[in-house]
Length: 311
Image (cartoon, rainbow, N blue to C red; front, side):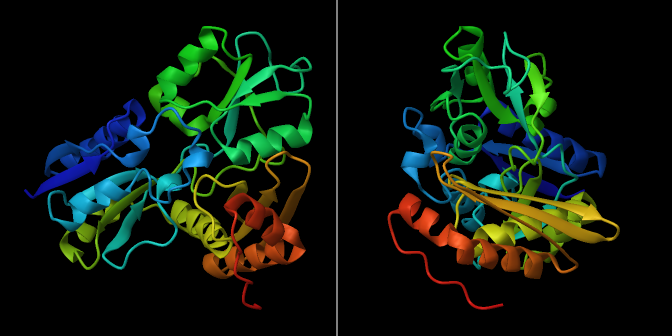
């Protein structure tokens, strides 16, 4: 029996994820300890995420604990994990993926199409905001922070006519009562890595990697590697208007991705098939940059985006 120390954020969803992984490890005969770590993103709760703009805002303090040897592995929502990991760390496992799509939640309305003009919709994501505005420019989209419970409570209290959340989080917590529509990826392209958990360890820790190998799902690894390669090519963190959705089809990969102006006035969409996850993600990312994604992202970042290498 090996003792493994697991690091996690303290939100309800993060704890569900950490307990889920801990239970699977215990089933394998391991002794598991859980350490809850407060991150920068947990401390800044009154500002829209897009305005904070800190890469790794939900992972930095957890990685510090990993680096210092206080924990042996960290459980992350993969979409929160920066695409460029420090050489000190590696992703030992990507778990079987929950539904990666976004969902429309409301007390009164059954779909995005059914919302009246000027309806107040809550989301903390520029990616969701941009795609909402693209299909419904008449909506009043407002920032929405807080954990899943907080967001649902604000919807119940009537502060919003509808909110958009990730299907995965609501499914995991069993809080699906207010889901009215699973939004098709064609209407709202999900975030890179959404629905998957990434298990991070110290680079070269082969013993821990071996203990976690059973958690690694081949399809989830391939699709999220592809999505994260695209995100990395675009220089994006989890708070920029970029969507990426890869699926395994007929033994290969199909990737659809978007770069959008935050006001929804322009949505660039690209889809392609391939067999190499990284190559496919990078080629779609390069194409989006060349088609005008660089100008959109430059305006969002407020700084110059480096020109992509020719594939």
